[in-house]
Length: 67
Image (cartoon, rainbow, N blue to C red; front, side, top):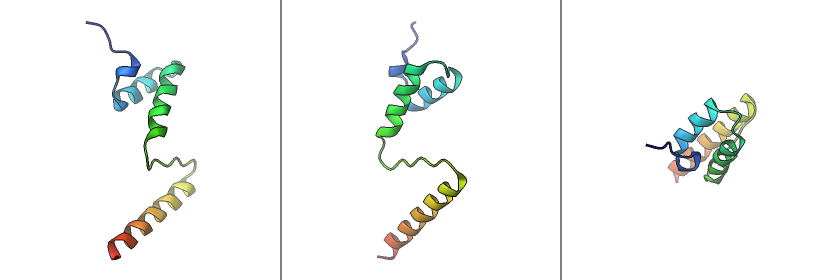
């Protein structure tokens, strides 16, 4: 039985593959393409950015529930 190529892996499987094979640039770039294509994904680089994004989303959710 042959192993699937990285293009055939699920997102979770590919994430694990990339974690264990950081030198595989093509697999990493394929994973980034998948992640970047998902709507609603926000990348933060600091805890302050994360906290601000979380507060923003909580505020939006609260305002939607009140309408």
